[in-house]
Length: 281
Ligand code: AMP
Image 1 (tube, rainbow, N blue to C red):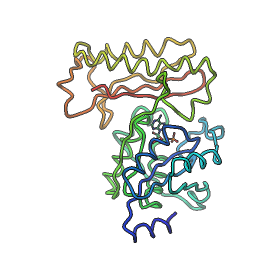
Image 2: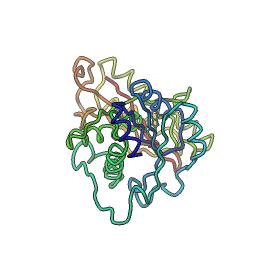
Image 3: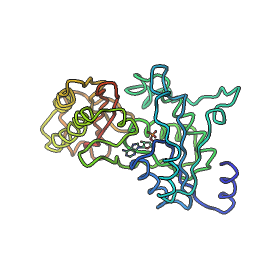
């Protein structure tokens, strides 16, 4: 990867990187499409990064579908599939970590999954360096992740542009995720409550008549409906740092013209943990 990147640099080629953990789906491929449209070379990395999984998380059972992933990347005309091994990425003696120590990393996912963003920031910086990428493409699906990566890039003066791409959904609304395959057909049906709640939140926000607490309560009610659901959070935040917004504030479009108001959901359906979000204003 480094040798290819050095060659591209000599040829003055721009490189678009799409970091993934594989089990590729239409969401990942949409990122490859953006990279291809905007850069000379598109690189997709496939790496199930052990350092971003907690001890009780799904690292061992995370789907690994390398042959199918390569086929999908070929079909999308992705120029390079970079598929390193854990031993290559974390060789003996590895001991340098990137930590985003405050906002936007220290809350929500960062609180519930304590080492998660350290693992993400570290592996992503390694991938940026290996591919010498001009731009890197991330899905809005992992909203907090994009903001953490942007913070890291700014703080460490990493010469790369981070591009946030829209969430790709199933026709019924479910955000596509590699983890959706853990769910039964009945659970998949129940999981539609997430996109339903976000759609409702957006409608309410646009009326200019509801408070932050009222909108969050309506979302929480909707995602609590399925009997197998348990809600980690259903919250409205300011988009850059994911700071909470005062509960009694009335949500008015004119107050959110130069910042984003974002609704974030993390909900377990049975044993599958799903996240989803929407920019409300
Ligand atoms: P993952 O393989 O789950 O780590 O995801 C790799 C990248 O794909 C991340 O930037 C995700 O945000 C992005 N991604 C995952 N699902 C979707 C989706 N449904 N729509 C758009 N991007 C997505």
